[in-house]
Amino acid sequence: MPEGDSVFRVATRLRAVLAGQVLTAAELRVPAHATAVLAGRRVLEVVPRGKHLLVRLEGTGRPESAGRSEGGLTLHTHLRMDGRWSVFAPGERWTGGPPAQIRVVLGTGLGTAVGYRLPVVELLRTADEQRAVGHLGPDLLGPDWDRAEAVRRLGADPARPLGEALLDQRNLAGIGNVYANELCYLAGVTPWTPVGELPNLDRLAARAHQLLEANRLRPGHITTGDTRRGRGHWVYDRAGRPCARCGTLVLTAQHGTPPQDRPAYWCPYCQRGPAPPGRGPAPRGRRPHR
Ligand SMILES: [Zn+2]
Image (cartoon, rainbow, N blue to C red; front, side, top):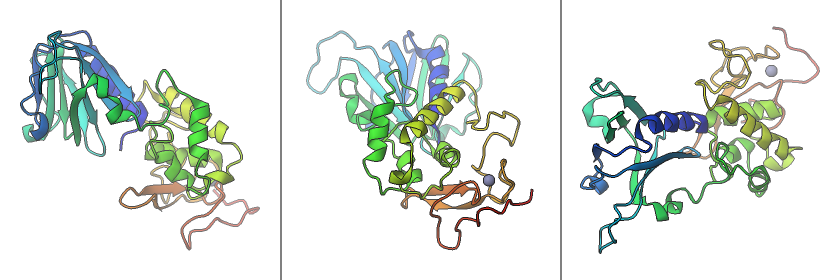
């Protein structure tokens, strides 16, 4: 599951070979759009919106006729769990997976962007982009990031578990499971803590923005400030290992509603709040040994 900062970096890499260039090759290897002819169109921009990617193509300038869109088009893709975009130099061998897994090919004189295993490939009129991304909350890495609106949306359902609310892209766009877990840790509460019990949602939203901003140009979703291997996260993917702050062993369970559930990680000492049955908080006041 990608985080918004990963998609931001993908957009940067794609922009380098696509933006401003005329497509010399363009294939959408999905049934709905297999016959679309995009070669010859100029790429206007590559835009990340939360975890969605939008490649905007110039219109052909001809008037629209029945069934044919001659105006601006947008290629909308989403990576979900397994999707990946790779960029290759002209003549370079494509190495992102077997050819059968290729869903999109966009080539220009500068290179070729190849989309592997993309579960969402949708071509729509740029004028209709809102259909694909209009449901998203404020975009953490967008030029129009709106913290107050994100706080309003997060707080609208005070009974909802925080981990789940953070993953809901309608509240704020760009948070995946790494940041959902790490933000709960940084707020000192478990992922099952009702949103309404957080004393300061504004600080949480500010922190989410800060973390994604800090990581938008580097890999690893670093939340600890420590870029050394294995030190980048407080609790995420650290089940059974000591919490970096207090030494208590990090626990794991699922959070969210199936089939949208994801692994949760938390430190029972540093994080207060509810946890699945039998996995409650450790008694406070007794400092665990390292
Ligand atoms: Zn701890």
